[in-house]
Length: 262
Ligand SMILES: Nc1ncnc2c1ncn2[C@@H]1O[C@H](COP(=O)(O)OP(=O)(O)OP(=O)(O)O)[C@@H](O)[C@H]1O
Ligand SMILES: [Mg+2]
Image (cartoon, rainbow, N blue to C red):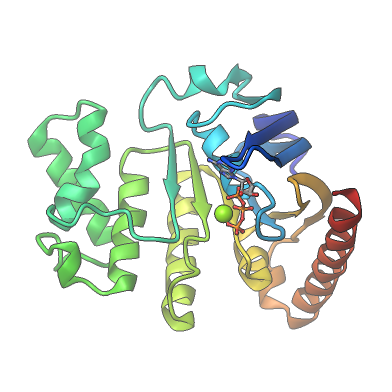
């Protein structure tokens, strides 16, 4: 993390458990603490069920913690999100509304922000052009490929001018060639906008490509290790190998830790 950049997101001793219908308790987040600097790109890797998606729900104010706290720009999350469109999420699965065109899907968030119709349609079309869908602005989701639908989701996330984007396995459902193109386009757009993003991924190479720092989570969610990704590391096979082995080591250690801690 850069020394000069102010803290954008601070997660302090966060805790979250669920009571299942069967009556048993499931611990999703355990004493999780980390900071994300403004304009930082953080990739999170960790085992399945490690509370990564639950953490994103908490960052979006959709779930509340049982203990600890999350602040953004020094304010509690609930206050930060009161102004709409400051934080966006891109999921693995397609969340487009099937009866709306690409333009109307992208314009939805702008509608919630109260942007007038003509302006929101124009901005939506601009974002669709920026993700390479300039000739599909009036297409319905059923008329687009999976990659095109995910491009539309990316346009939708950027359209409201968010300060933070959360990507939850956003490229995992795509074939590798499409995923590579979308990652690269996403990275270029994020750099252009000056924003902060967090990406949860099961792909170590994706974490190295998109992250300026990688957090390794154990299950339940807690910070097991973190690695800075030097600028240009993803272009150096030797650097990628070094970071990949370090992450693999910590994932294997965190797995053993989780099984003994349960
Ligand atoms: N609404 C809920 N009710 C009960 N348990 C829940 C709920 N949401 C999540 N959990 C539990 O919390 C734990 C963490 O879930 P979460 O979806 O955050 O995992 P994850 O790290 O995103 O996993 P994956 O990599 O598979 O997506 C799991 O054990 C899950 O069963
Ligand atoms: Mg998840």
